[in-house]
Amino acid sequence: MKPTFHITQKNTLIDATSKIRITNLQPCEVVTLRAKMCDNLGTHWESFAEFLSDSNGEINLGTAQPLSGTYFTPDVNGLFWSMVPKVDNKPKKRTPLKPLETTLILMREQEVLTVTSIIRNVVSPKVNRFPIRERGLVGTFFCYPESGPLPTVIVLGGSEGGLRESNAALLASYGFNTLALAYFGIEGLPKELVNIPLEYIQNAIDWLRDNPKVDFTKLGIFGTSKGGELALLSASMFPSIKAVVGYVPSGVVYPGIGHSAPGNSSWQFKGESLPFAFGEIPKEVTLEINRAMQIGEPISWRKTYQWWAEGEKQAEIPVEDIQGPVLLISGGDDRLWPADLLSEKVITRLKEHNHPYTYEHINFPNAGHSFGVPGFPTSQSVVSPFGNGKLLLGGTPKDNSQAQFEAWENVKVFFNKYLTVSSV
Image 1 (cartoon, rainbow, N blue to C red):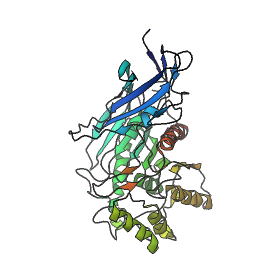
Image 2: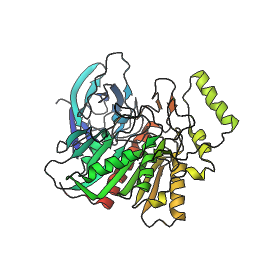
Image 3: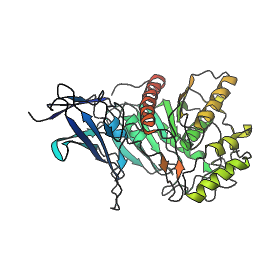
Image 4: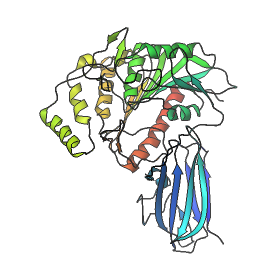
């Protein structure tokens, strides 16, 4: 009999649990399983693992120990998170939110034994996607066309800028409306993350208030990195927001990011820049960064941001004014900035002010800065966001992947509990 794949998926969404088995092999046979995928940004990814079949001629990816490969411990998701990008100079075609097809190829030496594929979706087919370009807003609204008013979450990206839809799309697949909202780095908005007017968030809130699909009494906000800083800040200022999630956030306002950033805040309100943390940095920290720049090594800004915030009480976000529960998620090995320590500042402040709502900080000690939709490759811990210079994110690929899955489950539970999703 021909070797056969047996794939069971809870559903076709990318965060769903799955089981992968291979049967009809020879007992104790060595085979190689390869995986190939093209993501929504046009990048091609590949991974592989070599396995020894058991005495029944079977391989269970959830329990099988790879003999070699791009990952080394039993993990049904190993072939997905351990993928590495294939370098090529071909033009990359972007296909936002298109279903991801991963091809699995089973081989004995150079012989192809069988091939199959797995389809994983970032958004449910039940969800409608509407681009928003009105009232000065740049975003995408995800909703259910036949439903009544639903709880709604504003979703913010980080310092990469532009419009990032994946978190909003996947969250909408679990019964929410979501508004993926850009706030800089795209046509019609500021080019740099400098003095972004918070009235922009108020405009988004007003737009949602006027939308008949939105249950305005159940409005949440969810931000990542600088978007987490903005989410906490927005919720502290606009009482319509009733639940807040921050991925690797900051409870401190920091300087802006960009060529015009020096001496400027990230945010402003009513024409006034918000106070920002810019404390003195020890000389050895500056020397460490300069040395990394000179030799082309990835840069960690963790210590810089930590020292900037030291004693800068005026720059702390008044999170005690938030009118609802708060969930913060961080990695203990975050090398971009100290989101774990910055989240603890939020928790300390909420405790000191006897915040009447639930608040929690979940830290994944071995994870870095990369928190987002689970199920994508996590093999890259260095990014070059602006084309010059490399930033170190931290964490190991396996730890980052596991943290993403667990964090995402906590996000879904949190919004379900505190915004009360209706069935759709």
